[in-house]
Length: 209
Image (cartoon, rainbow, N blue to C red; front, side, top):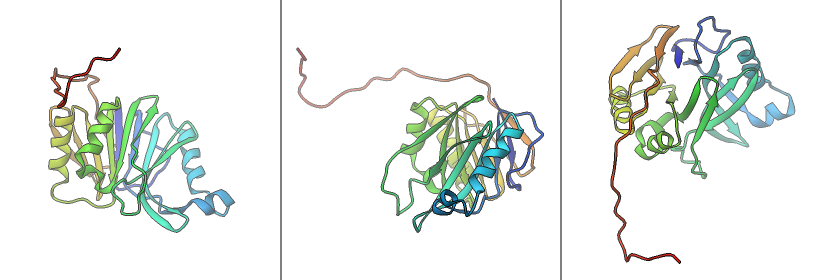
């Protein structure tokens, strides 16, 4: 899988041949009520843009769900909006769920904002057969590259974090690459790593009949 990153760009018709194209500039604030009533067409325009390229497109945005604002990620491919993922760490969030997008290039687990710093979220996406975990945020901290590399190694899945107009890409071995240049392409090897583990359950043994 090849992933093209555009840290300083909003979604546009890309020319780079890559399975995924990820944009650092936000789509802005999108109201679901305005989208459904036809007052705005931000999401449908974004979906239509994906019909002009062979890439699956991913971009950051804020969503307004009846007055509650979430940090979110939108995904589109072949002219269709695949979905919108919200930040689980939001204080307004009441539903615990993770999302893996099945694209032509591979399975992409999506996380937003502070979810990068929650091991259980990243681990859940790794065991849900993600080929890549994609993290989008408008800001980053000094710990972002370190956390990205550490979690990629611990969970055994590559992680691409695009935040604050900087892209960090970490392989399963924890090797980290960083870029601020639009059009940079990262490549996945396609290898998947696993290791044997032993689980013990505390309690009285029972035999099912």
